[in-house]
Length: 487
Image (cartoon, rainbow, N blue to C red; front, side, top):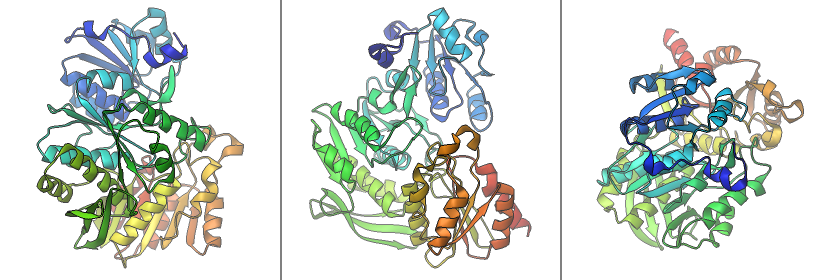
């Protein structure tokens, strides 16, 4: 398979204009990833004959694909490419020694990466609105799609989470715009650059730049280098909506060839917010544009990071000429995103929240937001270090400053530690000791079963359990609720 720099970016490009509209056969390797499954749904809607394979076929993606009548082959085997597909889409979980990847090369089949396929099949003739940054991509993408939808623009979208207003993370849409979450993770084994470089944004929203994804990025400079590439590929007739509260973004945005629209909670941005207060379950605020009142808003979102995300979407809506009435309606009816400060359930006045936070900054901001939203109630932060970065010791010291607003902190032993070199491993026990030195009521647990028992013992009426992980966390949310309901 070709691996030169030029062809790395292209893959083995077929003549996509000659690919039959239907019933052309497209096979997806690694189909059970959230984005790959959504792409499969898009292709199915467009009339293609879609098949896929994956090593681990289990809910919810297995059910999602079954409902779409897309056959999924369990395990990677050479015979999965028989009958011969017209095109293969290679997910970034696939290595070059994967049996199907080897067979793909032997058969000399045309193939694309996920972002290449998305660009061609989902938004080739549309204006892409690409949401990028270390934090806030999913919420901002979901909010942008909802605002456009309420305004009658019928956008397409592809999002890394599930917006509750749509109950789906993709839609083709008939409008001019396509909202895409611009992931900075690598594209495929034949293209180690970030996915967002393939999307050629008309508008890019840049929320934040921090070090993350330690399994593919060397350091912060390496991360900045790739976001710099994103800014550099913006065309002069495009727009960069940039968070000026982030000093790295502020420094990098000056090199943009296109107009830069600034937002942030500081006064140095074009779009800012003031008079922020939480009242009767809603956040109320005044949005300022160029130091003048732009509009008053109420929203279900809460926390400084989410108000920042909201400002970026208000800036986008202003750019697109959306009516203030539609923007206001969308923001107050936005139901959020599954696994982002999501209320999983309540029992005996105990609320259980689920959040995807795993980076130290995200953990800190999420805890702070929940503290403000549920003022006066005891906040128990339960954190599973599960991501490729959080299981490494690169953030060991930083995490010790992330839990200050919690009343109690509970941290289990990280899973899958055998995949991390010993000298690089994160220590939950060490973090708990550091938190205790900082005066926090913190506790370590060797496994989730012991953690669950402690959560049940500790529970009191009116408690808030904030459970944070980028994985399933051994279904501890629902297990906790079941135990509380039974007691």
